[in-house]
Length: 338
Ligand code: NAI
Image (tube, rainbow, N blue to C red):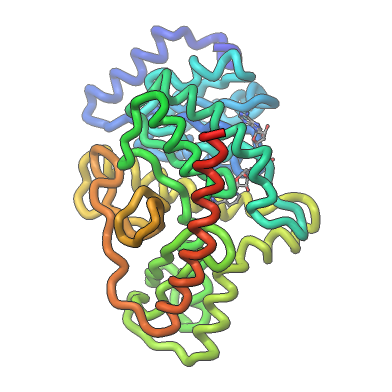
């Protein structure tokens, strides 16, 4: 263990097993891209999660520093760092959940699709590693464009003969987190009391908040609906512009990623009724992938929920979303067929 030389492998295992014997559940989680803008706060929040017993931090730069830093937190998870491609396999072996925020973020004027050329290759390499070293892990894919990287990951897993659609989840939780916040603001409620389903995908018009299904039940004027839908769809761009060249959402994304990973871990533990939105293989529409609410269980996304009743505004939005989504999905599949 390069960053924690005092702690022998056997001592780490003893600590993990000891905790398991005490009835405390412990899952092994890897973060790929752990030294990045999202990766660092994500690693910190994962180290604070009581469901995590072992936390592997992998990156192609700076992971030893991040690991040393985070390993000093007096929480339960044992942290190990891995640097560079030659340590990818060690980082992945035995993992229950792999969270992937590796890749380049947007700058002002860029769309998520502009990131495709760089991030597609990164996601492919990382997923090849997963196929080999932890084919049963639940994968939480954050790297953009999610609408294309999830189809890429699926093709990599198919090629390796290990594809299980239930275990591949594109993370759209930030759209839900934003929707809850913005809707709560309009309604004058605490965001923790608000639940907004966001379906479709994770880019521009493919982000489709279902404001007619907000809990607690409420209604919006046409102006409010228009304002909220646009603000939720453009939430990422709002942050990109405010950061003015220094990247995209990292802190709210890390929060959303941990909220989602925690739901996956509770599902793995066998908790009942764990339901969150995610971009998954789906038969809800004619498209092969679509984001809706899914029920998370011991084997991943065990149930994919239907859209439920949509109003006219949402039905029109759905048609727009599907048109763009079809192109992005095809782009991912074509990349792998090349
Ligand atoms: P960043 O540039 O700060 O960090 C990315 C990290 O990935 C860097 O540490 C870099 O060294 C690492 N990396 C690059 N190539 C790698 C490889 N082959 N293997 C492992 N690690 C590698 O970027 P940031 O802001 O953390 O964003 C990461 C990704 O997350 C971007 O693609 C961004 O668009 C996406 N994102 C997704 C969101 C979502 O809702 N799904 C929201 C916000 C960002």
